[in-house]
Length: 104
Image (cartoon, rainbow, N blue to C red; front, top):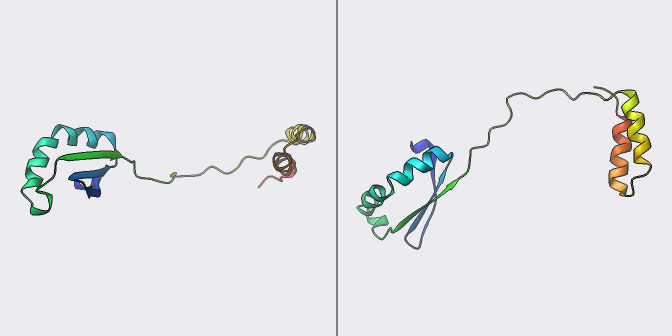
């Protein structure tokens, strides 16, 4: 259980915990009163009144990446023709660049 929880802060008699998923946050809410009682026995937490939770899932990068797919020459022509009428300069340049991109 400890690997799912990190202490964020302890201010104004309130302990703020970061939990990596909602399942563990729910489990902790069920035992919150017991947890507060036990923590109050530790001198540093003797004034503890409240426990707050934030769920922040741990980031895990994608396990695999797909190679970029190239666009067909016909699609490239359509993108280039549409780009001519785009008023936003950055978008127009990006579309033109996309239409000229060569397959990997």
